[in-house]
Amino acid sequence: MKNSFKICALTAVVCVSLAFAWDDDEASEPARIEQEASVEETAGEEQLASKVDSLSTELSAVKTELDTAKAELKSVKIELETVKTELSAAKTGLEANGTELENVKTELSILKDGKSYQHHIGFRFGAGVSALRGHKALKSDDFVSGNYAIILKPNCAAGLGLVYGFDLNERFTLGAEVSYSYYSAHGEYSVRKEGVDFGDLNVAGVSLHALEFPVLIRANVGNYYSELGPLFGYNFYTRMYKNSDLKKPYLNRFAVGITVGTGIKINNCALLGVRANFGFLEYAEEAAGVPWSVQASVTKFLF
Figure 1 (cartoon, rainbow, N blue to C red):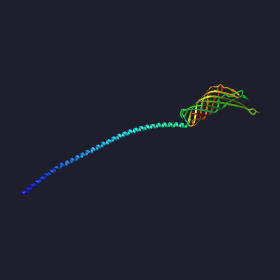
Figure 2 (tube, rainbow, N blue to C red):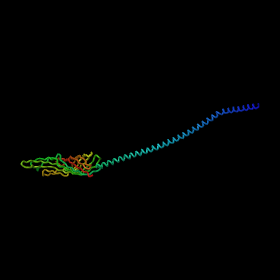
Figure 3 (tube, one colour):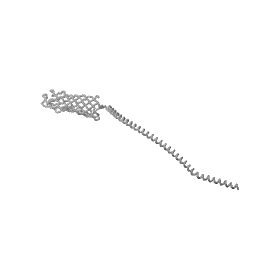
Figure 4 (spheres, rainbow, N blue to C red):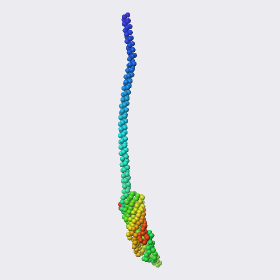
């Protein structure tokens, strides 16, 4: 009986202990869950903080890289500006060199073509016909077989002188000359006689010698030229003849006129053309003759 009571008492104690243990487990379960949640939250926050720190570090690195790239771009921009300046300077230098090259090419072309935009000195020779426009008909007691007058007609002319030229540019040349000029006019009249083999011939004429100073502007177009300018002269000798009757006209010493000419250039060192001189004043008193001439002209430049 006693043993049964002890067993029951022991069983009761065990059951009470189990009941209290169960209650303790039920009471500690929310705390444990809360603790676990707190731990997880703390871990999540730490993990989030770690990620934020990592992103912040990466952002800082990116910012640093951007700043570095910006500095490099700025440096590249400065280098590009420097290169641009150097290229501009090089372009200017090339343009200057190009201009110098063109000048050199022009000079070489000038040398090749024999041109020289400097001074030229040479000589000129011309030959052709001349006359004394409006000259009075000549009468003389020396004429045979009648009393009549001879009208003077064109005769030979010549000129020889020194030539100076200065190139104003490629197109125009200023020239001056000192030349000796010869003018002449001649006339004749023949009288036929019956029963003789030859008729009587009467001749008359005038010769004029002068120093002339033309000042010319010559226009150059390719291998052709034209020239024009005033003519100043000094008549220093003249002679008139009527058969064997010789006369000495009273000279008007000074002469004024105009010179015109045209022709071709040969290797830019010679001129071959035609030149005409037309006077404005009578060559002598009471003669009424005004000189003119047309000549084939050759000019040779020594340099």
